[in-house]
Length: 172
Image (cartoon, rainbow, N blue to C red; front, side, top):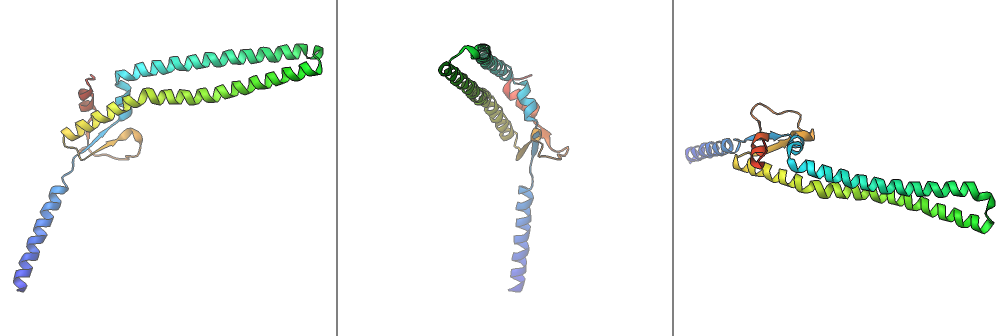
């Protein structure tokens, strides 16, 4: 009986070590996603659209600031001639205009960030899908993004999949 248990124990150990050896056969890849995104043609058109949108917001902001500054200058030039009631009205008007300028500035910044997200999210999703497709098709267990800076080392056995992903996306 002891002999039988010993043989059974040895057989189980060999089968477990064989299964472990099979599972330990990992394939690693890496990619610099920033480099991939920089060569995607959609990025240029998104960047241009974002730049145009930013300029439009900037022009509106400048127009509001000019209007505000003109109101302040007019008030300062004529304040001695205003009655108390007119002076208070003009001061309230200037304060309201200043509040609107500040509110527009804050809202414009948020709007610009939202627009950037809206334009670049589909590009990032397309890149991610291509990376996943290449990784799956080529049997990679893990693919590390080296642009994130969290991978401090990768060996020669880790393959750079950027050329494969560029090919998948039709980028030369």
